[in-house]
Image 1 (cartoon, rainbow, N blue to C red):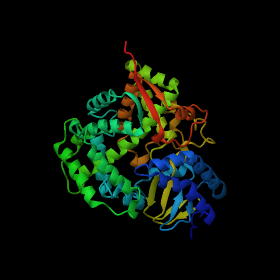
Image 2 (tube, rainbow, N blue to C red):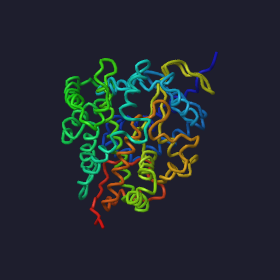
Image 3 (cartoon, one colour):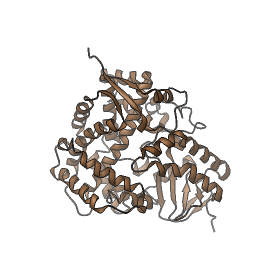
Image 4 (cartoon, rainbow, N blue to C red):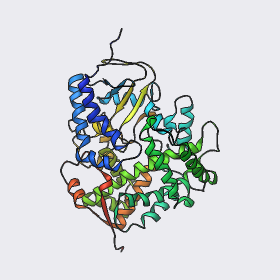
Length: 436
């Protein structure tokens, strides 16, 4: 009989829960909690997580290690080969629709592809890929998206905090996803934020069915009208099984994470003008390089340094075999992105801002750099996110001089960039550049 995977001692399991898992839960996996995000930065939570994972590797080996936690078998993924195996073998046997994830997403998007197992999952995944043009380098509605970004980012003025920027960002997002009529519909996002806040507690929070119905009715008006050039106009007709409209809440959710990555990137470019200059050069001479290539690389580097998905979860639907033993069916595997993105024993650029790694092939090595996940469940909206955030970066740098609050400037000009970066405390100044 095969032996079980190594199981961490009770004290090691408690330390892993404290240093790796608890900060993720506290910050809010679905909607960030500003107070806890600030605290995570203060205690350098991602540095602590990396040190804890290294300690587990030294003691238990590179294979997944089971933790002594209640409710269900739970394993931390410690080695790069196992990261790739789990992501490559999604959704079978490693389902993306984990118990915790389904419990969370049921609050606001119960029919989303991330909450769906085979056989229905493949059809919902295909629906998303068709609407988001996943396999095309540029979305068919790129012109409409770029117009929304240019117009909304043309209103930047003065000093803004995160909530100010988020308001502007979502004006553009609503136009991109739902059409121009949704530009000022802040009630839609207020309803969604309330549902996402409940979702932070997964199955441990009562579902607010009344709020969800109001949100779905509100959203349904835009889906039914389907403004030309909007993402929802690329959806197929309503279907009682696939629920095309039920995929849209996740698009809005994902754009929020994209806004966080963009805000952090703008802070880096404000603090480090040497990185802003290639973005400006690219914007002024678009014929010299592929469409927004450097801006897109800079955005991916922002997500590598500070992942917006704090942990990637997969649940084994059957018993799985590993070099060091067997994990029982139902085991939930956790991949903490920052642990691999910031491992300076493996990556010479772990703590520095180097967009070039996304252009010169260094990001394609064996060590897992997974800002948009990987494998069959890779983010289907990756190209849309990169296009819109790259366009926003390019427009902003080309048309504004940037400034950043002193505390953030100090943190971002250190030789080692902070592993945990509280975006909610950043303040950025946008001063129109004189155009020759």
